[in-house]
Length: 149
Image (cartoon, rainbow, N blue to C red; front, side):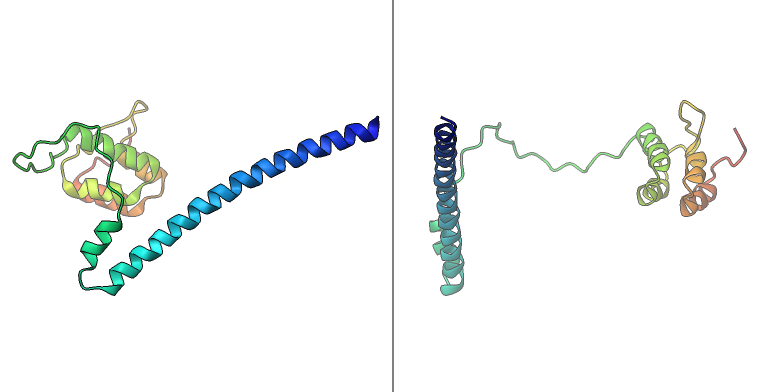
């Protein structure tokens, strides 16, 4: 009886493995077809002077978009960040120790340098705590208050 149970379990495992092998073969087949199509496309691009036209014939058609179509209007310049946004960004980047971004914000000269967090720490305090020497230097040049809290 024990042998029979072991044989039964072995056949079940074998059936599971065969099923997984079948799925694997399918996936490999799809991958192989995709590689063949990619190679054909490259060959078409390299073969003829009319390569873009030949390559377009092989490309699959894109699915229609479900999003709303955009209306072409006058191009707008990206909006300048507000003083409040820049001040928060400066405080945040100094708190997190992100030197490059903090320097960018300081150099744009929009942010208020004296904005403090809930613990009354300013960007200068955070820059000092995070040993951001270049940011500290730029903040001092820009006129940040160097007095203690």
